[in-house]
Image (cartoon, rainbow, N blue to C red; front, side):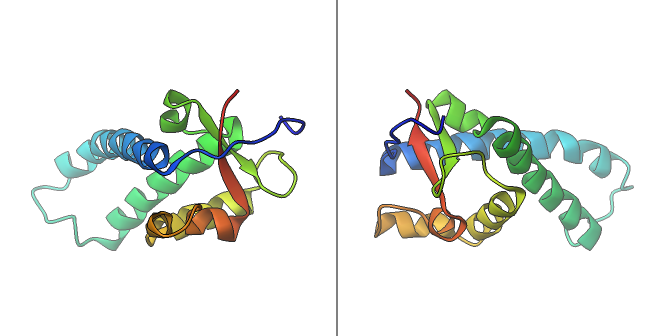
Length: 132
């Protein structure tokens, strides 16, 4: 992986990958929330801080697992792309993954409208590239 020439993916492909991953993540959140909702005795759980932490940990776990183990999420795999460390072309560190997730949660993709790279790519020193 480190001897390859990396080609960045375009704006449209990046957005489509985000949509794919969001759809997959929503389905995971739905199914993992069912037991909580069923056993909540009709209480309003949306305001519960522990429930929010539970959902956030699922989201972070989804991205951490796929980026650390495979360098790509299921959405990235569908569109033949993966993520690399911009500095050395190797696998991402846990710190880079967490930084990338947190910045994307606050709207890091908005920078794609004005610039070639997303804010999370710039700050975490990562790059979303095409597979060969």
